[in-house]
Amino acid sequence: MEPLRIGSVNLPNRLFLAPMAGVTDQPFRTLCRALGAGLAVSEMVSANPALRGTRKSRERRDHRGETGPIAVQIAGADPQQMAAAARDNVERGAELIDINLGCPARKVCKVAAGSALLRDEVLVGRILETVVRAVDVPVTLKTRTGWSPQTRNLPRIAAIAEASGIRLISVHGRTRACGYRGEAEFESLAGIRAQCSLPLVANGDIDSPAKALQVLNATGADAIMIGRAALGRPWIFGAMAAAFRALAGSDAHRPNEKPGASPGERTCDGSGDRPGERPSGKPGDRPGERLGGTSSAPTRAVPSTPSPAWIEAILMEHLDRLYRFYGEPRGVLIARKHIGWYLRALGSEMGSGNGVGTDWSAGFGVKVEHLRSRLMATGAAAEQQTLLREYFQHHADAATERARSASSRTSGEEPLHE
Image 1 (cartoon, rainbow, N blue to C red):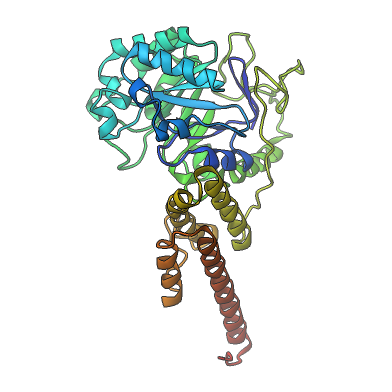
Image 2: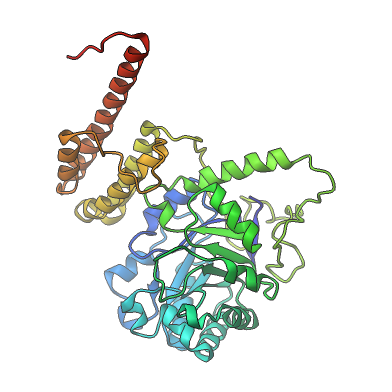
């Protein structure tokens, strides 16, 4: 949970929200930052100048009211276009530029961008060098371990990145050919830890504090990036932060342990300060102070076991942000997928033991299914919110009834049925 410095940018912690197309828009980034994420990277912005004026590109470059640091990911295969896109986004407020070398989507790879670039290391070097020279903010890299399991080339990509002036590298532990199938592997990340002095961010299948600690220990990574596990659970960052603070408290009195001496520390800005060390007290070094135009977002307390009422409040806030950002008709449509993710995630938060994919509505009858159908069909914001309140109230009533029935069975009384 120590701050992490990337060039002139100071991050309040080492828990990052991964860039996800169609997900990490301004409303979601802002909410995740408020709930504990130290960095929230924007949706991928195309470097193609012909697309710069489209509604999608304009919205992805909209950071009005967003608390920094503002990180924008760009994608493309032409070095000069990538440099121009980086400059354009810096002019619009970006404090970090992230280069996409990892997107496995077919429509991105077919124009030789995203993870398709992993097959052309010479072009990768040209793109990285050109973008780094084009802007005066730190440039970072998001990549995969290679094009395919047979052609993993992460060590060479990491070396190219370091030589090009990249300030941080995030690695998803799969190849492009793997997509999101199977389990992410982290041996590749551990393999570059000794050779690469860049701050290393581990990404892929990290969905709990236990998994995060396992990955950190296995790789020596400096930070964690969370993607799909944050869908419907924007509070996962605050929950992880609380778990890490509790662990740090239990380890606080270990003998022969020096502050900031954890494995995997690397120099981020050439100043000799290690990211794991506590800030020295110089102006701008403490989280929340201005440093290179950056401030940390206030973080809300996240309960160890979020209640349905707490989750309902977060979901309602998310919907309100979507309505205001996109307008009601589009906001309602975009909200549907988020509602689905929240409702599927509720099962794991309620302790069902079935994991993140559990659907909380399972086993609760026709009424809930009817509410879900109406939720996914309505085009009005007020009705969407009303239906959600009914949905949560139904489950609160069902939980009360279950508790009453369990109590009656324990006492030997017959439950009353109205």
